[in-house]
Length: 112
Image (cartoon, rainbow, N blue to C red; front, side, top):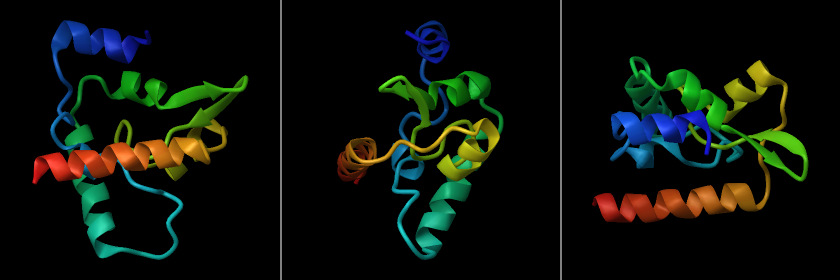
């Protein structure tokens, strides 16, 4: 268990809980979407004052087949591209995107 999940056990849910539809989407979708831009900005605003921001950033880096990769979505107020630039790690591809997208879609349906 990484420090982010330990923090959550001790402090309760982070401010993003209940807003996951703003945080998870395909960063690799082509083109500009005004709705997606607004969602990303809203997610980043939620992260701005989060006390778990550094731990969240660390949690967004996963190891797959011995290689560190960056999870899709908004983590610690940064999108996947921004976190890839900061860490130098490649993005999670393939099933990681599909799984995260499915979770986001299910979350969106449950929040309606």
